[in-house]
Length: 479
Image (cartoon, rainbow, N blue to C red):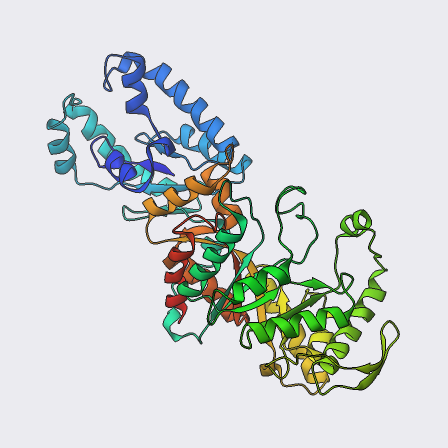
């Protein structure tokens, strides 16, 4: 953010209202640090050398940077724009077109006022600079007003659409990391589940792995066995649906999986969801001595598992004959309360996965930004048309990181409470879509328009009080 305007036009006041002190690089402050005070022009050269070095270092680290000078020097603006471009950071100019009389009045009230001739000269120069800014390469030239910085995916989705006109978009919560410090795993897990239910999440999901996966945490971190944990959660909740996102067909024989899910459905009062996938972690399989067949074979196993589960959850005693699974008299007791338990298939493969969903599943979990989700939905609908399946029967879900807060100060407090040391606010926010609840409404509205019916959210620091509760505003807003 390059602030452009004469002295006493309100730049520093505006910056302090919308950004934290560490994000603001002020020539006046640096003059005061290396000179007698902020008007010490003899310290100007050193102060600007420091300012340039700070800007270079901050942009190189991808940090939000507000340059608080008069911004009237074209060469300096050009250099800042080049630095921003090299760091792939969008640059904005904010023009402070304050009346000359107001600038002079404010200047006179300062502890160390500048000569009036300087203020008048700067004010005249602004007219010429304002005409140049539009052609200099800024993402946008803004007037004075409220602003906030948003994570890229959130900012890309901002359209100002009326979210109240959208259908009822629902939300799930996935728990994937359990590094909860001194908090007992079991107690904290149940507390998080209760908080999620109270916040309005429709379902709660756990991962189905024997060890933590590299993209989430370290291999030796706790990761509970999902069906045992979900059964415990069932006894502590009333309405939230429960499932794995997703169970690899390589992990269990479908008779075992079918019985686990039926039992979960019974003890939860009909709240189980079956998430299935072909698996992907070869190293995990190798470490635990589990066979990891080639991809085409795992697809065959996935399709047969769906058929197997439909039979074992139905009236018993029927045989099953497949390429990979066989049973003489397939019966499962207890029978699930739901008839049948809904099956969600994870994955975005267009030729096999989405076609299998169109043929046999109740829901698809796809990945990517809204435009990518929209493409996958289009492919799914094409498969439905070819197979004479009503596409409205299939729920489209997607997985996304998000952290919500009601206001900017609370957002920074939440991010600072959960971000790892050495990770900047910007890096963390970009990775986890940390944003105000009203901005996340724009993001999830974009997913809804893309064809997603249900968003499954991973909230960083989910055990920290306030992270789930703040997301309730997003859930209510989408309703």
